[in-house]
Length: 175
Length: 175
Image 1 (cartoon, each protein chain N blue to C red):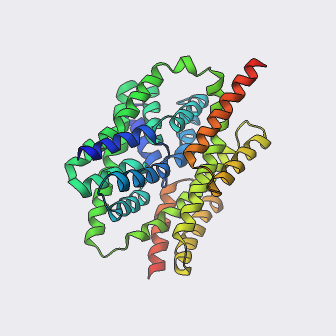
Image 2 (cartoon, rainbow over the protein chains, first blue to last red):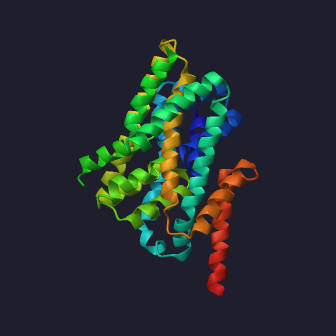
Image 3 (cartoon, rainbow over the protein chains, first blue to last red):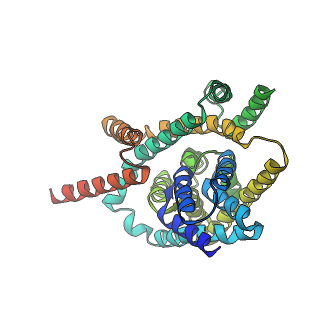
């Protein structure tokens, strides 16, 4: 139990960025250092990916829930959040000192294209991994066309509409 | 923006985006910058820090915006609103999936199209940055190439860029 908390703390201290980066870290750490099964991790990943952001606390809480029950969720998530809160308080306090630093300014300028590339790469890999047969292709392409149509055809930005439209489309496809 | 409005905005941003916190970036501009609650430069800095500091990006963004708008109270309430409901929803979904004869892998066909559309939006916003076209497209496609050839992982790519910027910075100062 303590090992799990320690792993969550280490993941919070070494991982960064979006949930998709954390998923690979969580898989590596849990399969190497704990007896948590891959099936438990797969279930946690599927549910975390299907529900809205943030991915990592959902995944960690689902693993904790499957392994030790409901009450263990909160310490598992708490140790994951605590380092971030300390860093936020510290950086916000000293924010004025480094916001005019030329290195930080350059970093802010060059970072968006790198994150854009990482996001695009992750989405492409996820799509390829999950669409290997023709049935999967149909299940994937029809909701995609519907989403693209709503977003760019009708110029609607709200993800809630895409979610509802995709649930309906998937339901119709499975009939 | 009142505390209640802020907490509702946290829910709107995080609960409507699937597939990772980097895809929430356009919503910070939509809800905070366009409505003049937080200046664009501040949000840019927060996004950079959220990406380069260890920890989940969504926690950083919620904590920084909460601290900026309502101090520590805003930060703590924001994080609670970010975590507690979504963890409870994922536990309920986990139990439902266990009871019903439902194939959990189907959930990915709902979330993938939304992730793709959100990524396109994010990448379009990345290409609107102030960098010269050669620099931003260069960084983007070089990162994509390194990732797709599996020469470097996401974390290494970010570190390599940080070092390049650091060296360029030092070089320019000496020059």
